[in-house]
Structure formats: structure tokens, C-alpha cells
Length: 173
Figure: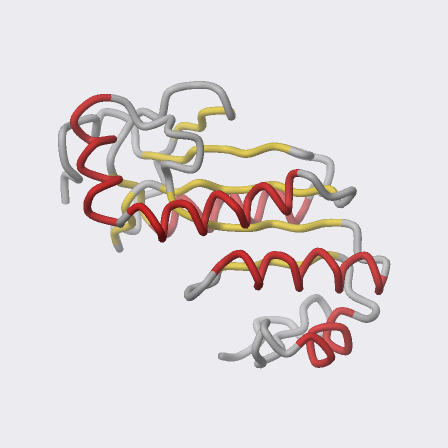
């Protein structure tokens, strides 16, 4: 992974499960962007703990939809069964760690991702039903960049992101 602008960003390769490396990498940073795979609960705990230790106040955390059982109908049923209950519960525990912390977070709950270069998305807040089934990575990146540029944007929020008009019983690729 490379840098776009070394004056503006620092890309650090490491393992979020290595707490000491995580603390070292967070020192002096403005925000943390996390888009992870694996067992989420211990990773979220490490991130929050390291942010508190280093004084980093802003987190952008990307995960999948379904954290709050907010995906209605057949798509919600399909999602829960295809991802699996334990994985969904692990994801929910990770989000709870973040939400219960004192850090300023934005959790981005993404629909199924595609590589369409088009930026076209709608957002739902925690407590609102999730809408569509897919979203482009370009759309997610657009939202992330907006939050990076304005750290007060979507403070302490959990946002669903999807492409308008893609509602259905399964992802519409």
C-alpha cells in the first residue's frame, strides 16, 4: 500500500492485534481509519484502548450492515443466515465497544460492495431501517474522505450506506 501525499497521511502496515505496535503507530495521528477483517471484538477493544492511551480522538470504522437488526424483510433474514450468527454477534460486540467509548466515532455500515466507479449513495442513521442491498466502494470512499476533511461531520454516528434504488431480497450485483 502506498501513500498519496506523505505530508497529509501516514500508511502503516501492521496487525491491529499487536497492541504495542498499534500504540506506536497512533502516536501523533489525527484520526484512525479502520476497515478490518477477522475477529472484530478484540480488534475494536485494542483500537479504543490505544486511542485513549495516545490521545487520538477520531475514529472512522467501516463494517457491514445488520449491526442493529436494522435490515428489514427477506434481505435481513438472508443477511443474518449468510453471514452467520456468531460473526454478526462479534461485529455487534465490536460496535458496542466503540459506541460505549469516549472517542468521537463514525461507524459506517456498508451494504454489499461493488467496484462501480459511480458515486451514488444514501445514508441511514442508527434506528432507521436499512434501505438498499449494494453500494460502490467509490461511494464509501467519498463518505470517508468527507469525514476526514471535516472531523465534526457525522460525529458519534452509526451510518448505513447504500445505493438508492437497490432494495431487494438479496444483493443486486
